[in-house]
Image 1 (tube, rainbow, N blue to C red):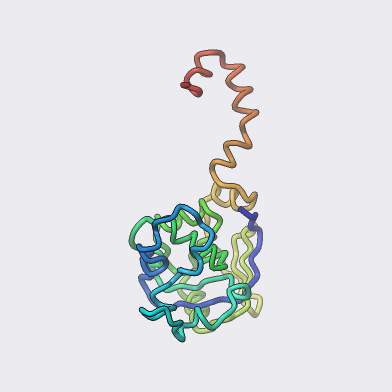
Image 2: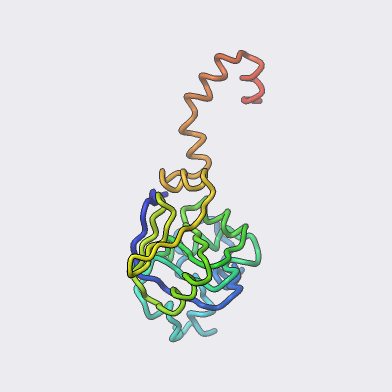
Length: 200
């Protein structure tokens, strides 16, 4: 994962409430464990007709490289627990999702994979919905969203998840980075602890 300290981008606004994971990545695309390529199927049923013809949806009108922050309606990411949903959004080009409410399982999957879920208050959310394409700044170090006019909106993120995102590592990467310390502890603690932590 690439480290995240600050995301500066225009927003892409999807104002619908209860955008679920099946809308983000339909179930028929869950046959792979590879992340690459899932972005072309993100919001597939919104972006294409049944015969594959692109629709006039905003997702087909804007360059994802210029709109890396997705602003969604309340209760974003509800539905099933599929990890493919944040994979698809990341592969499409998003680095962060902002809403007044983001589903817990979607939040957990996003944090593990390098997609930053940001929950803001209602006034800030309303401003973002009313100003699609606004150029904003998400500062993960300070945990604030900076809106035009020097307005700052604080957000909360679980400290360990924040640390991992800032470092560009997942939970496994964090543990692997501590391998020398774990080995030293095992040597100091003796054979009983070593056997317990290495059962094979």
